[in-house]
Length: 134
Image (cartoon, rainbow, N blue to C red; front, top):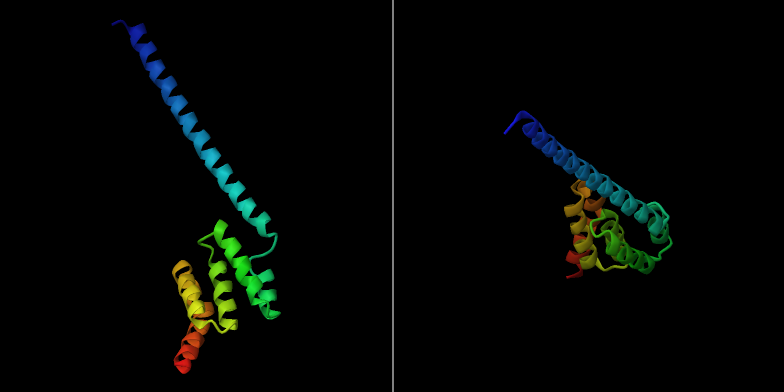
């Protein structure tokens, strides 16, 4: 094999490696674009901040509407802690303490940093209500 054939073979390998690297960049760019579209879809689907609408409804005593919104949001975002936060609070306000505990405990699994500051007071209050009920 002479030198020119060896150089041509190496150039072909380089060409395929460059094509493979370019394909990887295209896949990465497509993944980032898809992720951005999903995030945008999430913002558009609610067109509200995660807290504002549900908190207002809870203050107005419209717990069933909050439960419906949480159910709809859970379909698109099953790991969104706000879904379980609002669900837990709505069930608590309705006096459905077992359902409230279930939602709030799931919230603790999804967002451990919410444990003490947000979920703990409701969990303790719901457990106390269940103890006094029995």
